[in-house]
Image (cartoon, rainbow, N blue to C red; front, side):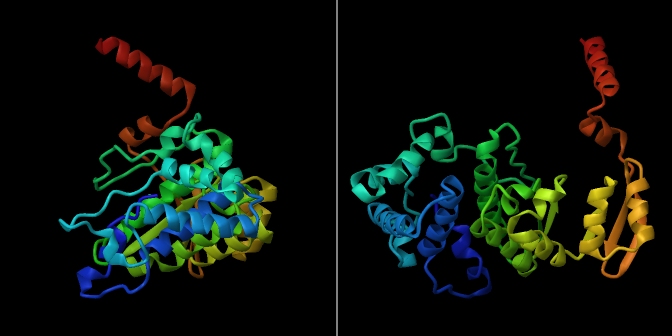
Length: 303
């Protein structure tokens, strides 16, 4: 629930003041969080939730006035966590059902996700690994990671950066919802204005195009200047042919390509490419049993 200072400083470096409410921005993101947490949330529940969120931040002295984010010493005020929101929701009869949904992140098995971040994330290269999260929590984990990374990207309009999203179907596919998908699409539309680029990857093309008849998957592809298509099965290749407008020859090439080969699409230009890794890269990414056995033997010999 942290409102990050980066979102306030983005335009300040260029001598501009943002006049909108950062609290309103954060509450909009928390609505996405709850829509992923409770897909069947009603409009009435969302209205009660909105009031509870405003109340929760007010208890920490934070209002729609951006100046309220600062303490007397000029530092950012402490922010509420999900436990604080949980307590607010429990106090009101109309929001108790939402507090039950949230309890998993307060007293349950996912309570770590509801605490303050205690990891130093101030690095040039940051990897958010959510691969060990349960399938039901994957969209939530993806959204929380993306929310942090997107704020990180917005720290400066001048500094170059790249945001890489693997398995993006989690947020724009059947397991997601339009609120989360719109959030992702907006990033692909505006990230160049922050001096950045966005890269996404997916292996599940059917789910990539599953939400609202593929509306979001197609829009992201249309907002991506460069597309790389690796080897696909015939049915998937036919879907890509339709979306990218490939010729029959290019489609057959995708089907026949071997591992490491692909079709690079940049604007109206399409060329065949082959990707070759260095020995160090190959050793880090290989999943072949024979390679892993050789690595194991090498480690044993050293010891």
